Image (cartoon, rainbow, N blue to C red; front, top):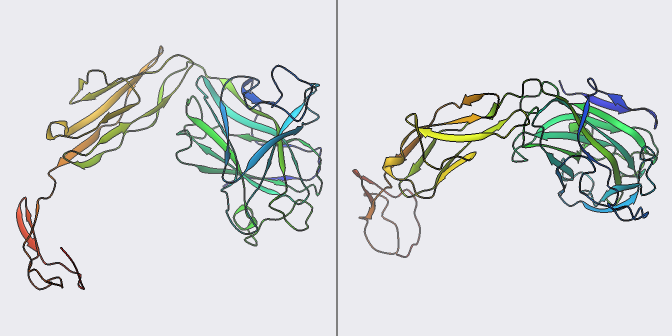
Length: 344
C-alpha cells in the first residue's frame, strides 16, 4: 500500500522510516563560491555528486531559500509553469539522478514552499534504471493553506525497495498530481489554500537531501537482468545489465556459451548487424572487489528475413482472390487482404 503524507502545520514534517546515517548527495542550491545573492545559485550538489533536471513544461529560477539553511547565500530552486487544470497528470516537476553505490536504506527529505494557488498534491517516483522507467512511491500533501516554508515537508524511505540500495543508476522525481490519483476525488489540481489552482504558481525546493546507511560488505548485486531477443539477419541487437553494490568499481564480462567475448566489458553488449553466428545464449559476469555474480541467460534468436516476390495481377485494383505475394523462404503464397486503388 502506498503511503500518503499529510502536512497539518507548517512546522510539521512526518518521517516515514528511520533516518539514515550519512548524507549521500545534497542540493542546497547556493552559489559556489558564495555571492550573497539569493537570485543566483547552482544546480551542482553541495555534498556528493549527481544531476538535476526539470520534468515536462517546468521552468526554474532561484529565490530566497529555506530557514533551515543558515548560509548568508541562502538560495532555493524555484519551479513554475505547471500543467493547466485537469491536464498532464504526473508529467511536470523535478528529477534527481545520483548513485547509491555503497549505501542502503536510502531516504529523501526536502524543504518546500508553495504559492497558495499552487497544487497541494505531489507524487514521489523512483527509477532504478536512470529514469528509463518510473515507479510511484508516496504522495506528499501540503495542507497548510499557507505559502510558508515546511522544513522538511517529508522524509521518504526507500528501505526495502528492490534496486534502491547500491545502485549507480538510482533516480527520484517529484511531480505534480491530480487529486483523483493522489487520494481519490476529482480529476483536478487543488490549490494549497483551497481556492483556485493556477498553473503559473510556483513551487520552491531547498535542502534536497538523500541519505543512507553505509552498506555492510559492499557485495555486488544484479538489479536488472538481460532479456532474450529475436532479430532478423542484419538487424542490430543489444543486451543490458544493471548492477550495483559497494563503493568499489564494478566490472563486466559478457559470455556466450560460457566463453568470454573479447572486449565485451561494459554494462551493454551491442552488435550493429546480427548474423546467424551471433545466435545463442548470453550471460554476463559482474564483479567488484568483494564478490562476483553471473546474470540469468538471455537467448538471441536470429531469423532469415522474408524474401517476398509479387505474383498478383497488374491493374488499378489489388487482386484479393488469388495469391499476390510469395514468401520465397520458404515458398508460400498469401492473397492480399485489402482492396481499393493502387499504383505499383
